[in-house]
Image 1 (cartoon, rainbow, N blue to C red):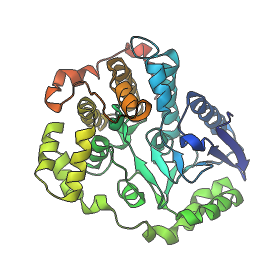
Image 2 (image 1 turned 90 degrees about the vertical axis):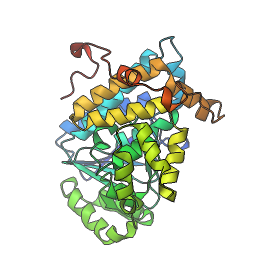
Image 3 (image 1 turned 180 degrees about the vertical axis):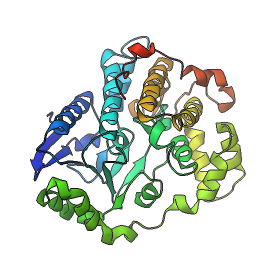
Image 4 (image 1 turned 135 degrees about the horizontal axis):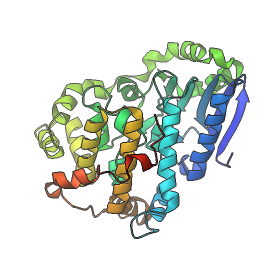
Length: 361
């Protein structure tokens, strides 16, 4: 493994620890490859009954992909991408698919920041996953903030959130905590951060085949401690506003609601890329009708178009490189985004037989 991905085996459980704390465990290509390699090996290993992924720091499980790498790789060629950048997204999305269909219990300790690519390595499929959050969990799919879109399977798991919660989370990019994550179906169990040491000790002491039941029993006394969900309290308004048939209509609906929640959502959307909000809305609409593999293939197509367009490069420049917090979105306003611009992001880049994720099923 690389210096940032540590692995060990305890009681027939494979334990992965992300150890890049200064970057909040942001995923590099090497880390994606390490994770793919170990998970592929453990999938076939009869001596491994379960897998746990966590962090060496309580600040973050994973804050996403390495966006400085995106910026550098995106400027490597006139068409908006280096070979390594192409490899990153192909291999990251293949990793997301591997995790979604993992045949053994896959436990994600979602303490601290879990955003973007961190969600991709934590969500998993319903047959195998246990997603644990704490009161310090800060979860988001904030890609529209940097001119990207909710990828790493976001078109699948956000589009299946209750009501219009997926559209709300994808279009605003706002952060939620444990109670909201549980309500939105993006987490399964709550454990107080102060009990995470005891949980990790339990994991080491419990045979892998018994781990799911043991973790569920450990977390059961804390079920009510996550607190109240603001998404649940605001659900009717979210469903009303975000069911509108365009981003412009959603924002117009929010403008007519003087409540603090609606106004916070509106203020966030006014800062986001107009084009990528429209692409995100379309992505989630399409994703609702697709399986996991087709969602990831769609996202792989959209991300190629995004780097060619340059929206994410401008977003990263403004927020991370120059830090002027003044992205020059293209186009700059929502009324300049038309249906043809959005449709272009979904146009095939490769013939189906040559798609880089053609082997996913």
